[in-house]
Image: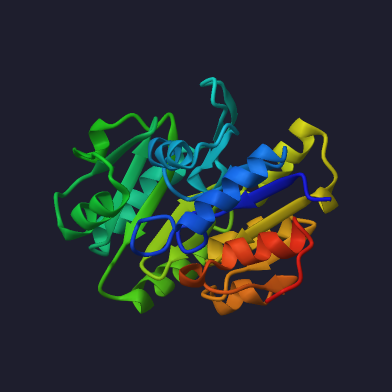
Length: 267
């Protein structure tokens, strides 16, 4: 019996249109009514993820920053894993030298050094405010993550992941979309978050279903007793999944819940 569904947001329950389908909203509401815990586990910053949780009427903790930050509905911080200042400075130096647009997330505030196309597009899609400020003037004591962006060249972003993973094996560096390169710590993965919640609620692994679509969801899938990849998932993710459902545009999330939570036959 599934007692916890840990789901990614973008590309999993939320299509590119930015609007949830009625079927997804009804499915999540039904699971909550049936006592099943539904938790969003996302690379988004907390303030943005919280708004998604509110739109869905969720009453569970919100997992943001790829698992680096878990906050209860009461406002209590349950878990936090920040990027050490030493690495923050080195990543910023690398970005300056290589003309990489970088987002800096400090104490759940989004900073950018330039008011350019990348930050404008990113903030517009996620409905976020941001502050333009030199990173040297921002405290590095609570950096939840850094994010490199290039909306025009996905191959360049892949190159960043490969290059920086070799340079900083102590960090967790992953693509969350083809155009976004995430920098955090190995303690800030979606698997870390799900395992924390598993212990927090006293659950067994086989009582947990995890579902996602991007490479940063590979860790999420590893933490589930049942792991589901969206039909629009990356090849790397699909290779890790127990089951491949339909795409986000075709309510793949709902179809997976029908099978594994409600034991309905696949259509």
